[in-house]
Amino acid sequence: MLDAEDVRTVALSLPDTTEKVAWSMPTFRVAGKMFATLPEEETSIAVRCPKEERDELVLAEPEKFWVADHEASFAWVRVRLAALDDGDELRDILADSWRQAAPTRLLDSHPELGRPRAG
Image 1 (cartoon, one colour):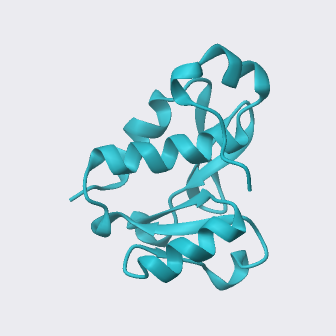
Image 2: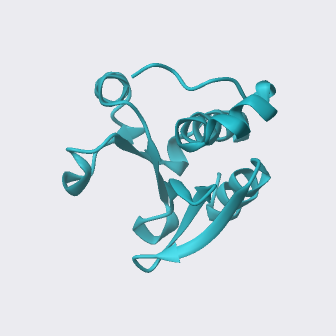
């Protein structure tokens, strides 16, 4: 089962990512902009996700994705670590969130990570 150390390892492997404690939890930032947090006793992650895509994910896989009440008006989704298939899925989710927060210069410098999806 994936855990907080797996999240930390994957997140910090992404370019220009730093870890900072905020609101008493680990957060991960690219160029100073937050793209992931480890809330709920570090059994889940919160990541950036366009609202339309987020709603589809929650409907399709409610055992894996959900929206915290206080984040409903923001483009973030929660992901249960225990529900993820493997480390590749974790990397895909974190990389997608990273792309949404990363500045253009980093996206241009790291084409292997792709571009953010429109949302």
